[in-house]
Figure 1 (tube, rainbow, N blue to C red):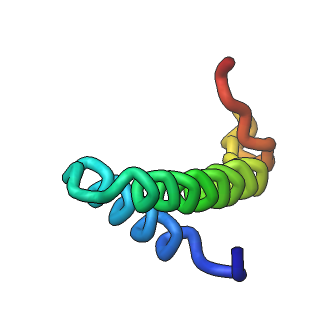
Figure 2 (cartoon, rainbow, N blue to C red; figure 1 turned 45 degrees about the vertical axis):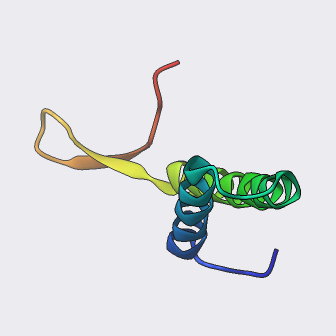
Length: 75
C-alpha cells in the first residue's frame, strides 16, 4: 500500500464496508473488496498503535512542577 494518511485509509475502509453491507457486489468483487478492507484496517490499526506510543501525559506533581510520563493503557 502506498504511503497514505490515516484519514484517507479510514474513509476508504468505511466506503468498502458500506459497499459490502449493501450486498450488491458479486462474490469475486466482495472478496476483493474484503481483502482491500483488511489492508486498510491493518494500516489504520498500525497508525493508531504508533500514535498511542507517542502520546505522553503531562502530570502535575504536588510541588507544582510537571513531569512527562508515558501513556499507559489499562489491560
